[in-house]
Length: 109
Image 1 (cartoon, rainbow, N blue to C red):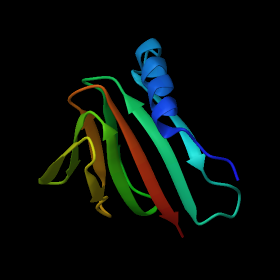
Image 2 (spheres, helix red, strand yellow; image 1 turned 135 degrees about the horizontal axis):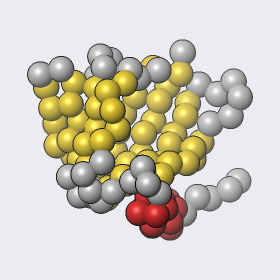
Image 3 (tube, rainbow, N blue to C red; image 1 turned 45 degrees about the horizontal axis):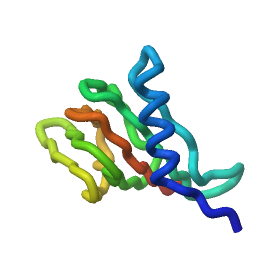
Image 4 (tube, rainbow, N blue to C red; image 1 turned 90 degrees about the vertical axis):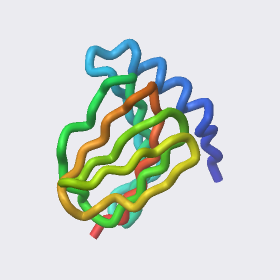
């Protein structure tokens, strides 16, 4: 079994986000062809937004580090280090108020 050092990966991807013109970096931590679960580590520089999009399945978002706002329609929720929320099924976006690292878990259909 392979053990992922999430804290180390978070630091690497925050560094990459700072180097990328997009202000973001991401990597799939778990997911293979045919799998029904996908987990993605996402790093965002302060001020960056993952534009409005639809979730491909039931999903949760955990803030591993930083401060983000998840917005869906008229609703919004702030996530800080250690917070976890179910991602709403409607279109939504995520805005980083500080440099942040997120763990997105998606149950694929």
